[in-house]
Image (cartoon, each protein chain N blue to C red):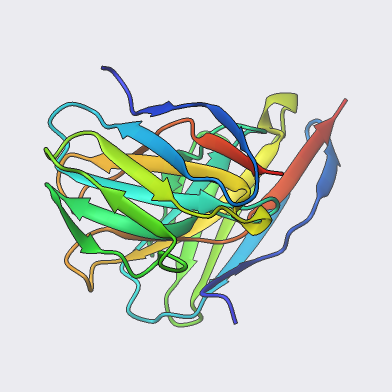
Length: 113
Length: 112
């Protein structure tokens, strides 16, 4: 596709449930990033993939958060036992190489009730 | 202390005004600097890169002072369409990749 696609655009879930957020990067982009943006804050880094491997997952807040990119294209961010504090916009971005600028997707707005 | 600090605003200005945003960063190893624009409920989009020599793009001028670890953005002749949040962003390549660190953003509201 022409841009980075994220689905769903909105997700409402109950506290304690499991959610998966999907990111479809620009075709051919090897680098993929997940960020989280809470209300009134800038995006905060979560994880970086180069190809299939998570090269830097230092931004994941705890072990309830996990992300995969099994074939080096689509990535899924998985959150277990969701908490109200997980409510935020989850942004995905991709770049052609690890040193290039990013293109962001439009995000998934997650609300935990 | 946050790595990138910005005045949150909001800045409420009339059309035609000149407005300046400031930003400081704490990591002296930062190598690249940017201003991003984010409209309400949209993703951030690159406005411009920032260089030590200063750079201009139409009504927008960005400046970097590495010694003071300070970045600025000046908007001249503000338009209603400039209303948005402006994010100051730094990156370093210490991990071998372009890791962006965002400030919390400064909100601008331009009114008629």
